[in-house]
Amino acid sequence: MLDQANRTFICSVVFIDLVGYSKKPVAEQIRLKTSLTNNLSEAIKDIPVNDRIILDTGDGAALSFLGDPEDALFTTLSLREAMVRENQSATQIEEAGEDSVRMGINLGPVKLVKDINGHPNIIGDGINVAQRIMSFARPGQIVVSRSYYDVVSNLASEYAKLFTYEGSRTDKHVREHEIYVVGHNEGALKKAKDSMKDRAATTSTNVKRTASAASPTGTATVTLTIPNFVQDKKKLTVVAGVLAGVVAILGFLVATKKGEPPAVPAPMVASAPAPAAAPATEPVKPAAPVPTAEAPKAAPAAGDGKGEPPKADAAKAEAAKAEAAKAAGPQVHAKAEPPKVEPGKAEAGKPAAPAAPAVPPGTIIFAIQPWGELYVNGKASGVSPPVKSLKLPPGKYKIEVKNTTFAAYSESIDVKARDEITIRHKFQ
Picture (tube, rainbow, N blue to C red):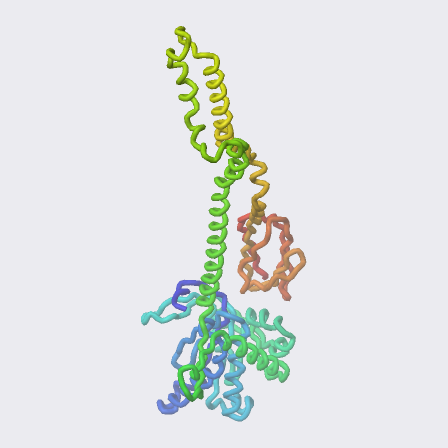
């Protein structure tokens, strides 16, 4: 989590307050804080460590969820259910106000920073508004902001039944907030529990190490969850290894293919007619045919005194010269033969050239406030936030952004390779 410091996120923030905490004796404060810590730990056990940041506020806690927006709803419902079990019912909690908490949830921007001890901390409007929203809640209540309601109520019909519009409230800074109270709808609570079980099944099975491998009894089990960014690095390492292997194989095939042409002249030399006609005992005679033919010319004593060789010797010299030329001919032909291999024919035997690489896509960056459902050419493509960008092949597209409360926004764009197009819209 520390490697994400100084980054800004749109996340769900839960602010929890112990009612009447500062007015109680120290022993009672310790009991209340221990109870809150235990119940909160149980509520967030199925949420990955890298998806949450918890801050101790003294008389409560502030939780920032960087993952699914439902995490905040699951946590507060579980915490309230635990408090209900301890205090018999939510009605008794609200009436008595004993050992109860009030909670506020907001969806907004926060920035991750390091505190004075080097630990991760959160600041920004997201946590500030969550505290204001919490201040409007009564003991035992869960109150959410309009931005959080707009996102979560559209995720499932059961969730929409949870929320009841409470009205508009003004904080101490004269800022108005529309708030919704989370009720006790049984269908919504069942949906939330089922979702929590599904999350537990998917997040806890990332990496499991059992103590039975090291212990002969095999009674203890330790479950470890690898952070998401570490998993991504492992995937990248595997992909890089596979690509390196493919490159090595292609390099070997290319090197082998390049080494084959020198072997082409060999069968041509073997098929030359001269070596087949020459005696097996005279393989080296063609190497010196010219000196043998010129020797009679340099010996006038064998002629008629005018420097001309006798006719019989001349015939022999001509025959020797013809034989030498005949023997030398295939060697010259063999050496000159490789150029006959035409480039087109040589290339025809090689494997087909690889297909041209695909045209790189363009990037569409979204800056939508407070949120909007994205449609590309009429096809749903997610909700922004949390979706920040989409990669699309080059071409013309119609982008629509819809919000259940406001009129839809549409824009036609022409995407080109490696382009970055930003679409900004604020529903108001």
